[in-house]
Length: 299
Ligand SMILES: NC(=O)c1ccc[n+]([C@@H]2O[C@H](COP(=O)([O-])OP(=O)(O)OC[C@H]3O[C@@H](n4cnc5c(N)ncnc54)[C@H](OP(=O)(O)O)[C@@H]3O)[C@@H](O)[C@H]2O)c1
Image (tube, rainbow, N blue to C red):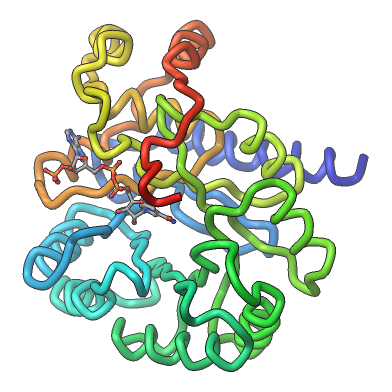
């Protein structure tokens, strides 16, 4: 019961911030990105910037450009091989580091207590930062308990503002929560119109953990950007299929991290806070669910 009340309060806070921002915002500006409040009280942008495959100069320039356009949350991972590029992009933007929310992930080969501490230091060095806003266990493999203990210590030492996981199913998340001293703040999972995972989303939210969706566009697979349902819904609001997709996720209380190296798309993806999908629109999008990961090669 307590959990349900807490979840309801968190959802209300999310919606309150969202609707407040709708009322205040201009188009695609910095103020237009609302925040979610994580279960440890830390505030996190509800929309951020994915960086998979944005390496070297493309990574540096895309991140710098995204900061200038108003993105504040940046999602990277050790396995992307671009933490250095992301760090350089942030430096290039000239933005005060404290105004950014930098998130990276611990890769499978670095699992375990000692390895996690070392991997954390390496990531910080590459990113050019002395603390992380968020650190996630990338996949539920290997010594999860050992890694979590190391992350809890780094969190308590003030070196990470929020710790979480990625690609955990409900049972894996519940198992970690049961043993953890510090509850995960986030579970980052694949969610897009073709893989909606309603039960998993509900289970994560009900446990008071924030859902963050990866590959919101399924990288354009299955013709997402020209999908008839998404395009027709978008036409009603003068929005694209991409914007409808992001809005559909945000209205479910899910943090989104679309990725692009194209500045026009960067702006388009920010411009999703001045319209609202109806219940009927949301319902229609549920019909697109193929109930299967769009990235079977990663599983
Ligand atoms: N935790 C995990 O296991 C995991 C796994 C995968 C991804 N992620 C995270 O999630 C982020 C997002 O997922 P993703 O990179 O896989 O793919 P995505 O965001 O679903 O799709 C990226 C693709 O969409 C295109 N695009 C972006 N905005 C567009 C728009 N408005 N109109 C038309 N096309 C648009 C991009 O085009 P351009 O190529 O032209 O820029 C790019 O080809 C990643 O970058 C990463 O940070 C996490």
